Amino acid sequence: PQSKDALVYEDKEHPQRLFSIGVTEDERFVMLYASQRGSNGNALYFRDLKKRTPFQPIIETYDDDISVIDAVGDKLLLSTNRNAPNQKVMLFDPAKPKETDWKTVIPEKPEPLVSATVVGGKLILTYMKDVSHLVQVYSLEGKYENDVALDAIGTVGGFGGERKDPFTFFTLTSFTYPSTIYRYNIATRTSTLYRKAE
Image 1 (cartoon, rainbow, N blue to C red):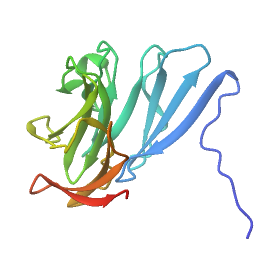
Image 2 (tube, one colour):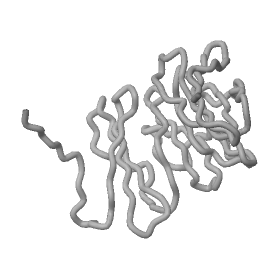
Image 3 (cartoon, rainbow, N blue to C red):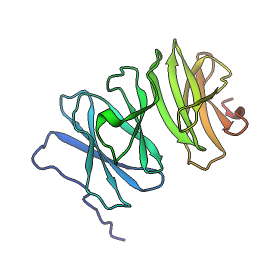
Image 4 (spheres, rainbow, N blue to C red):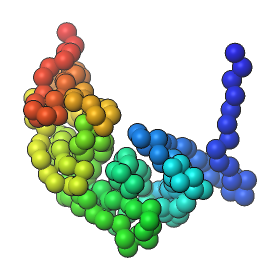
């Protein structure tokens, strides 16, 4: 079989820029990330495939990191360190694209935000607190629900999945043992051991 490539975007006027594409789980929005050599952040653009709009800017500077976590209806959840060195979660409304109209969902905390995912209809945030990760679960509106209990001090990874998944998986790596995989039940807020290295 012969493979076919599709050109989604190019910018011949700026050869020092790199681009990557992502899509929200519902496949409604396409995100275009642009980075530029020598910059500390990225620009971010979006396309609404439902409305068949061209790429429109969310932010066009290259001074801060900004990424889309997922779509919430016709809006986008963003993670950014813009005016928040430890990161915060914002809600972007394409109908009101000015930065002054962005809504804070989770404000910046003293602990740096390491990762943010949406799974099982919840927003799962991982923070670095002291020398360990702290995992917190929020509603998509930003209401705190619970911490994910960890069996040891260490670092976690994972918490991927889809909006309707009833559970997700994560790994916990401690200072005293290798990575262990846990299954987290979103409804019961409990973690169970899934696989442990011998």
